[in-house]
Length: 385
Image (cartoon, rainbow, N blue to C red; front, top):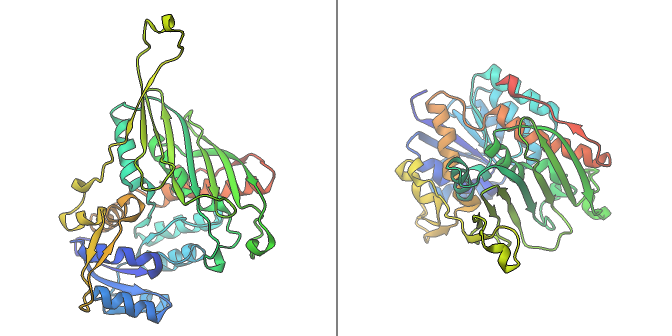
């Protein structure tokens, strides 16, 4: 497919942030908006000058004008909407997670193959400026051998829509785990996880999950690193944090305690041959700040401004609006990879098999936590690639 792709953005709560990026991409023709709220459709449509608006997802899928959809609806709709779009002959980008059930993962893989269309899970963490900098350090051997990885996502969901009540934290693991899997190139072999703390009845909702927090150890297939991940959605008194810390044999990177601060680096120094005379033991480390990498050179020029705070000039003549570049400036990189995969007729970097490898461990981790830390084998998907 060499012609521009027409894209429908589905779900304008989170999805609004992607609308101007799709409009600016040289590989995109028209943009449509899909949302149940007519008020939100009108507001977003007026600001960005988008005329094509749908309140019914099915109506958009039935319209042959739209080549691709980007699903940013609540998690419970991800697999259903993905399957419907693939079966309607649309390319699909979907926010994380891919699914919350292993059978749905299998069905999506099969539907993507049958459709011949592209599927991409839009995982922000591996396209963020911080991850790109760490990956650069790994590739130039600054980090050395990876020995310790700690992923964390703590976010208090009190006051969020009711469908988040009791949501199993590990089923949203991809932000915290995928950097380890991308750095190592490995999948997860098995997992042991535990729930910590207990939800009160008002926070459990209909989920049946009793844990506000889940902690897991993930054994990789073919790599010695054992990532540790903590996921927490309730009853943890701290500001939001979503990130990872990685230690190597030569250097390490620690995620900042406060979001938006720069991660710290530690570079192991050579052992001082005279150190024993001082009574000190061990090798010293030099502390610095991570030199982040926005990756602007990887983007078409019209998308480069979206890696940082940017201005939106409303199409309806309203006052200009300044928007933050959330998730480490990853959004334009995600859009560019998805659109490029459609135009170049190639699988995206986070296609269905990779998405499955990054999603299934969290589903298995929650199963382990619900069974008192039972070791759970994670399905292997690479033979499907």
